[in-house]
Image (cartoon, rainbow, N blue to C red; front, side):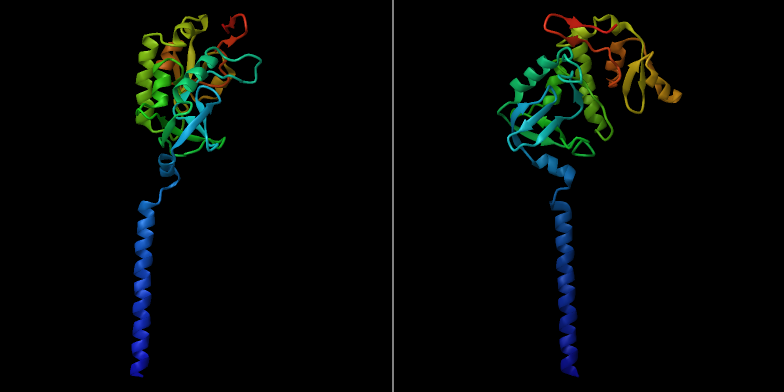
Length: 243
């Protein structure tokens, strides 16, 4: 009986030791193993080429969307690209092609609904591609759900400086007749529409923001909604504006 009790005691102690080791391993992996968001910080890569002014493809085939910005569309279902779309793509390509990049997560979700990684892309010299594109007037701030607020504000400040100095696309965009129209913003989505857009009726009155000019909407950090067709298209001979 005494022998049996000794064996039982050893078994209990062994189980306690195993349980203790299991707990230690759980704690270790909880803090040491990256979550999906943290993993975005760890996956560096080399830029292969650009799809447009805000999306790059890495040599390992991952597609990365620059967080917090948007650029004019190269292919938006129309025959011609939007004004400054080609310039934005060329600028991004010259900045990043063939270079090592570091991806930093600034979003609650590390991927968008297209499956692209959403990240603040950092160049070898420490500069952010989103910062550069905004500062040069080649992109505008594009706030969206889950994006860190301090990151959006950082980009908005850079954008306002680019606007005040009429860098890149801003000189032409803010001189259009459409720039002097009234626009309606949505506080929740931080998108704006032309005042006569039927989509405005779907915005709750408490969420509506009135902007006297296009510049007012952009300097507030709002981005144009997709059904807001003021952005001019470029043909081979001229730029077509929408009044």
